[in-house]
Image 1 (cartoon, rainbow, N blue to C red):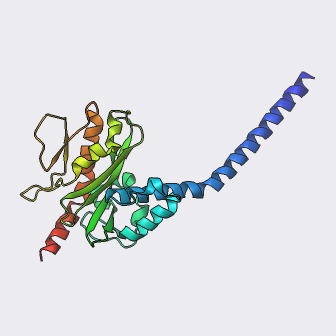
Image 2: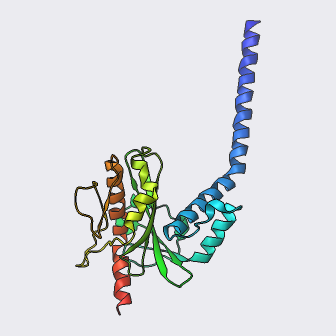
Image 3: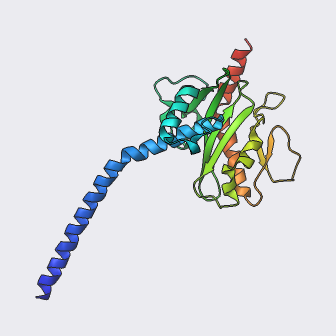
Length: 245
């Protein structure tokens, strides 16, 4: 009798495992398009926020439609280059995963660029960035002015930095410091932007204050900008030379 009971329990449990697995698979399949859409909208919103667009997103009734409309209006072009600054027309900029590209040698990287144009006709160039903080990845977008040197705006975020410390990289008070900073010095050397310990040195056009108590995350942001923007150095120089011809 006990053997029969054990067999029944085993069969029941096996059937339930199969049923639950099947249901989870169906749910995952049904939800995947919505998840992918949410990821796409979040990325488009961050691109827009780096150039101070989509500012009404928290107050509109249809967030997704609003972001799509703003993106269509202000992001006028996107493309991919290689480390020489040459266009790669067979690659879609929006599909490039910067984290994966950074694992490759510089010579093999696909480097995406997004171009925005405001209502007055001014263009900015937006570059996705990715690095590592204290507990996990940090990432965002950097928008440069038409001189390919001056930062117009930045958006940073993280997955798991410490609240009140490293997590402060996604605050306006930290990000606003980057506005107007230069990534090339007066001699034309690429220097990026240093994120220094608050009060440790005088600020200038290549330095911002880091986050008190968030030293490693601050260093992660600095290294991220140096590494990723440095990958575009040839492109920046090519564009500057082209503009001066």
